Amino acid sequence: MTAITENKPAYDGQALDLTGKSGARAFKNTLATVLIVLAFLIAMIPLLWILGTVISKGYHLLLNADWWSQSQRGITVRRQGGGAYHAIMGTLIMSLITALIAVPIAVLGAVYLVEYGKGTRAARVVSFMIDILTGVPSIVAALFIYAVWITIFGFNRVGFAVSLSLVLLMLPVVLRSTEEMLKLVPDELREASYALGVPKWKTIMKVVVPTAFGGIVTGVMLGLARVMGETAPLLILVGYSKNINLNPFNGFMGALPTMINQDRTELALQPAADRVWAAALTLILLVLVLNVLARLVARFSAIKSK
Amino acid sequence: MAKRIEVSGLNVYYGDFKAVEDVSMTVEPRSVTAFIGPSGCGKSTFLRTLNRMHEVIPGARVEGKVMLDQQDLYASGVDPVAVRRVVGMVFQRPNPFPTMSIFDNVASGLKLNGVKDRKKLTEVVERSLHGANLWNEVKDRLDKPGAGLSGGQQQRLCIARAIAVEPEVILMDEPCSALDPISTLAIEDLIEKLKDQFTVVIVTHNMQQAARVSDQTAFFNLAATGKPGRLIEMAPTKQIFSNPTEKATEDYITGRFG
Image (spheres, rainbow over the protein chains, first blue to last red):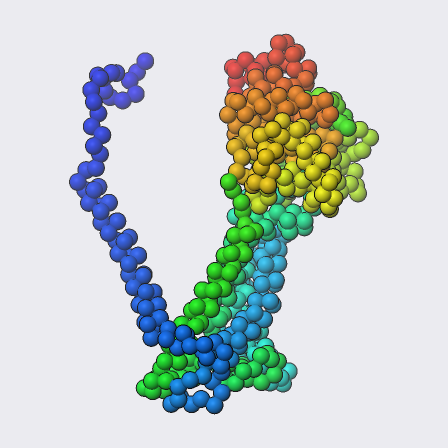
């Protein structure tokens, strides 16, 4: 038999040198580790900075019960007092309507793309359009709804119009993430279900979507977090009101981003500045609370193991 | 239960590619039939045509006839969903539903087809788990997730799930290839038991397994890569392993090939 490697005795019983790292490789390893940790730290700086500033400057108003129960009715920039109830409710109502419209369309659209339209021309076109829609700036979405809702139909500026434009922003985010989640569901599970004589639609409803549920909820939260902070549609499609208005079909409405915008022009005045920080913190908290809620929902219905 | 399968002149295509050519065979009821052959010879593909699972793959189509007793599975108007209710399947990798408990996994076939009667479900789950030799191991944790079981237990759970819908035929696509020898033994014992009630067809790469569990063995081969797979020989297992008619069969089972 010919030797496979040259100059190597068949067996010499000598210990091998397995200490490994040569100087250059150890250096590269350290360098890469340092760079990665550095990148992480740099990414964390703005995040912690923003959180730190907003919390330290905004928290004291939030400790006041009035903040959660009063509106800004009759309160000028120079005066203290009042609360953000009108803005919190406005943000919640408009976001909720947005989610109610966008989530079913997005989830069903993703189901179509992954389960039915896979590889077809229609699916590729829809997918491409969604990509474009993802890049549409909020002000364009807002002006589009302005053109339809106000110019063509002649309706008034109301909260519902804001929701419609937010749908355009939320839809692609939720659809894209749901699509990715559905793709992650192994085909074996679909086949297992088909092999039991379960029709396709029921397989999707009872096996595929529940398996991807946690991921879908995360996508919805990402979409919601995005639209809750959008300002341009609020400025264009509904006026800011300091009064409590819970009707999205009539009159101006408060919202946290526009509340921040309202007092922003008078930052030299302490009461206005305090309210800006407090409103910003409230918005962050709102997103946080919704995230925690969504995670709880996902946990109770998600994949179980052990 | 249990039905006879008669296949005649079956060709399977993926798009333009002919994967399986001109297979004719009879699978006897209440017996175990094993398909052996090298990788890519079309035995799994052929198995999937017996409950129309190949239709999941776009472009897959079939010519020929598959008769389940008097019923042609490919006659016009036959619903593949209805076919799969009578011809169940167990897959290579255990695939319990990750969102469901052990109980719900076994009950899933009935539940997803609209059975709500709790008493009936409990009955069926218990009977199926007994039938899959799994009852004693899981009876105290039916509400625990199916994905928490060991690989071998998961595969028996999948078998329990398949027999819970009371099919006529059970197809098994290399059901032990992802399992250790002890779990494999458990499945083989189970297959022996299943043939009292069902027609069992099993694809396996393990010739000892085919020799141990099957009554009939079918040997598939392909002339060359890119050529369609064919049924070379089908005979009682004893005969295939002791005195095959075809040279190719002999070469394969004696290890001179593949």
